[in-house]
Length: 80
Image (tube, rainbow, N blue to C red; front, side, top):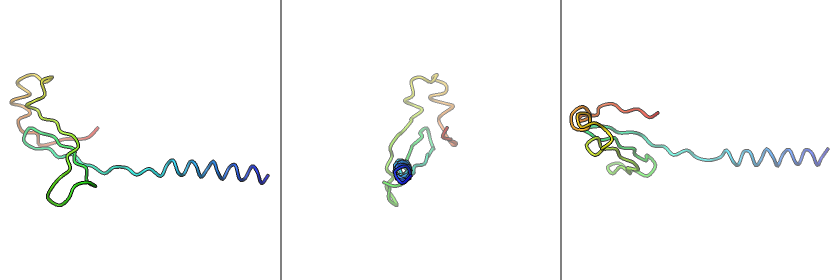
């Protein structure tokens, strides 16, 4: 019985340690023809730490009308 209790305790301890991962806090910023993903933890008051960017003008997989006209002013972006 004691051995079983110790085994269950160790198993639950391993499970808790595996779940103790921290999540990165980041946010999306959009404007003009760009979307930026900013790492909140690594940024300071005036300098954002940009970890990913998307530029509509450079997105060659979009039709030209979308690339140069419709996405010329990105004013809304949502993470999915």
